Image (cartoon, rainbow, N blue to C red; front, side, top):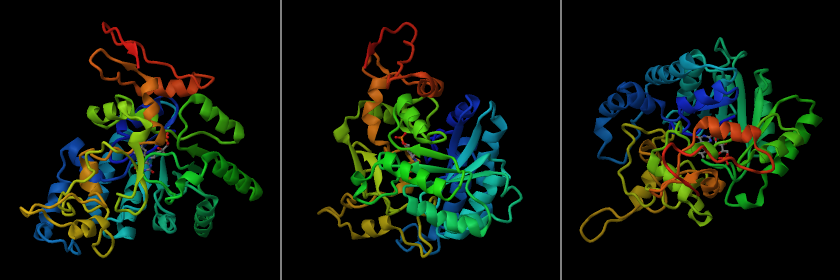
Length: 404
Ligand SMILES: Cc1cc2nc3c(=O)[nH]c(=O)nc-3n(C[C@H](O)[C@H](O)[C@H](O)COP(=O)(O)O)c2cc1C
């Protein structure tokens, strides 16, 4: 399974390749009105921005809201487009983060989930939150009992909470992804993330499910870098694995080439777990992320995906608390980043801990850059390479390349 990477980092193209090859690919549901605009030249972002024009010069964002019908339309557009192109024996799921409050948490989450089902998605992976009421929100949807639904947890405790609420709608999850502390994106751990180990949590989850006689497939995620790593989890009792970082340097991945090359060049010391995300969850980033120290004005009128119900966002607070220099120019905002704006520009280089090993998966070209891979190459490398070996891609035609 290739994990969801927002915003449009796990593209339709990447998900389609995973499905074609018999795996499961994910698109992300993060900022899909914006993603639809970029891909299909719709005007969801512009329209929303124009409606909320009046708060642009103020830090009071209480009136900035999403129109659920517009959300439905944009989600449908994105989901239908990928499902129409699907081939192969695999499946295409959507990653839906609860933590995107979008100024009206329940209402916007319902619109996004319902439209994903309506658009024919094969499965929904609930992430970034406990999802206490997410199933209830879509209980009345016609495909509620047919579509696959899974959740990402980082502890048995979180799984137990979800199972309790799932029991209330008599709808157990079809799979559980257990994400450890080495994953990319937001982490389900606190500052003490180093004290946790994916293997231990997976064993705990498997033991718990066995004890409860629940036959739910478990997929570990976070730091599974070689096919052998994956096999070790399968031998423990996992049904499959979820992977992401190794696919970030593929041609199909949505990151700009500049970011892909930064991923390749990174060293272990360049990776850190930051508190810069206004969501409150730790976010693993490269130190070279262009978003760090930016002082961009909060961009809630076009975006506003992180806004709480009452119109607040930790970035707005951090922005407000940041002073100006002698010339009256805003100083860098140190504590938080405007996640919406910077994800829209691919300025936040989130990555898994082992990003610095990507250089061992490719070749350095004469111009100093690393060769991009195909998703098929990475997928098959996981499937067929043994003894922790990683296969290099074929040399690009006409270019002698040295191993990176
Ligand atoms: C660039 C990037 C973006 C990610 N974005 C999301 C996301 O939007 N939602 C989510 O649930 N997980 C996200 N993740 C986590 C992955 O889906 C996956 O579970 C995890 O990174 C697997 O570990 P690995 O990267 O070491 O293979 C992201 C990971 C990366 C590398």
